Image (tube, rainbow, N blue to C red; front, side, top):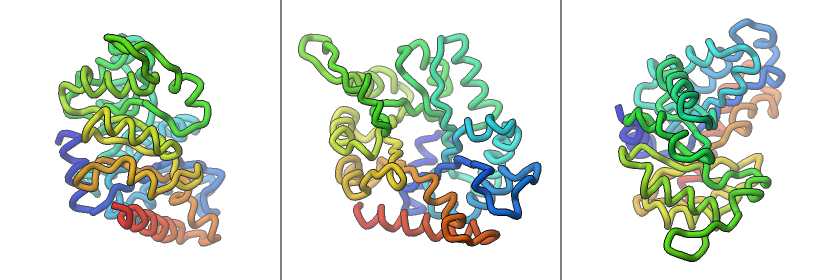
Length: 279
């Protein structure tokens, strides 16, 4: 199934714009999982099973698996999501960006090894570094545009000359390039941080109904109401609003031990409902 088809179906059928980020840190796992050889997989599958009906997609962050030599558990996790929760898109958060021949291998890694439905990509090496991902027309390619971290302004807010005259911000150039030139298969999206609602508004104006992956609510301080006002499309969708740590470690904060997945579900439900209240 085309990534965008699956995403739109999940938006509607689950009445949800919530993306659950999967950033497993074994140091934060409950005591009964500590030291177990498949602890990352056990933790993540429990979170997935507890929240799948509340989420429009899941977003595993590859570094949290690779740092613990758990790439095999990442493969198993994505296979689990596809088997147990069919139709739920998986966005591999890898932020890859390299020359074409290397990008080809990264695309194989994401789409053929891990079987992800979409991947985050760094566009700052230009179109030839992105084309290997675009060669998979049914897979989502979600490009960094205006990121949620404060240092994103170091480059993304620089003014550059516009074709035909005038100036624009670099993140605006990225948004236009993706919307006007790179999205021939209709499989592109952009990353725009919830910490910058004015820029979400600008990106939405430049890209029409293109899906936006929005990190930065919760721990990073992004405001849900401002994010929805700036980024939702006319039908009240268009966003994948990511929450990771607040959901994953809700049980740790509440000292709920083996009931960590139930705690995660409660926070995911509250977050989805808070988002829907602004739609």
